[in-house]
Structure formats: C-alpha cells, structure tokens
Amino acid sequence: MSLNKKLVGTDLGLTNEEKAELLRIARSVIEAKSSGKPLPYLSASSKKLEEPYGAFVSLYKKGMLRGCIGSLQADEPLYKTVEEMAQAAAFRDPRFRAVTEDELPYLDVEISVLTPLRQIDNPEEVQVGTHGIMIRKGFLSGLLLPQVAAERNWDRTTFLQETCRKAGLPGNAWMDDDTEIYVFSADVF
Image (cartoon, rainbow, N blue to C red; front, side, top):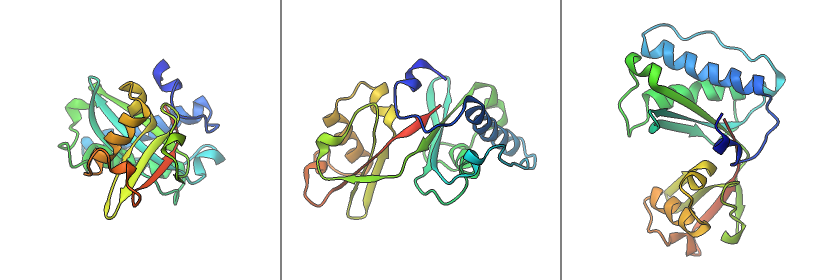
C-alpha cells in the first residue's frame, strides 16, 4: 500500500490481513483465468469479508491503468464482489483487451471498498481526497473514485467537471438543476 493511498478515502475497519486476503483473491482469479486454469474455490476467513459492500478493482501495468470495473451495489459478500470485479477489470473492461498470462508479473492490483452513495444538494459538500463522485443526468452517468482527484491534484470544480465528462456530459452539467450528484468514500488499498 502506497503512502498516497492512505491519504484518500476512509477507513472501513478492514484489518491488514483482510486487505491482503482480498488482494490475494483478486490476483488468484486473474492468474487462473488468464492461464486457462479453473477458478479457485474461495471463501472468506472473517465475518467482515462476508458483509455486503460495493467495490472496484483497478489494475495497473507499469503505472498505467490496465482495467477498472466495480459495483456500487452491496448485494453480495465483499470477497465475492472483489472476485467478480477482478475478473471484470481484467477481462471485460471495454477500454482494454483481456489481460494475458505474460502480463501478470507487471500487474498491480488496487481495491476500493465503497461506502454507500449519498445524494447531495450542494456541490460544496464534495471533499477532494475523501469523496468519490457519481453524476447522473437523464440516462447518462459517470463515476470517479476518490483517489482519482487526489492523484491528479484536482480541486473540487475540476473533479465535478471531469466526472461530468466521464458521463458524456458537458463539463458544466453539474450546475444544472436536473443533474444528480452523489458522493461516497472508499477504503483504498
């Protein structure tokens, strides 16, 4: 875990062992699927990992984004959500080709365990470094994790503009009355 990751998001009470287990789960399913092996049988070693949480799995290759998929829904146990999102990030992110076995030594895995979304009325409530943002207008929506703004040294306005652009909206759409803004935080490791 880099120092930068400790400076963003929030602490959801996961132990270092639980975080290491989630990272092992993500890596093991990516390794198995990329090498054509059956997926490992997975179970949780703690009650916390059996609690429902939304999560994102981000993959980096030599420091560059290689895949990122997540689920906002807290329908499944956290360890299952991480398993599914790791597979999705590695093999179903439409921005990238599927991860191959020869890339495995170069992949870094980052997990963001999410707090529930909370709709806000005042954009001044957005706290860069603590919050991620989801913006929705009509059928369009976009989401950026808390670490994105912190890593890029964005201010609140830039964060809101870039989340709008991610949704396919004009950068100033966050100011429209019919635009919904949601915040959440994440335990990033």
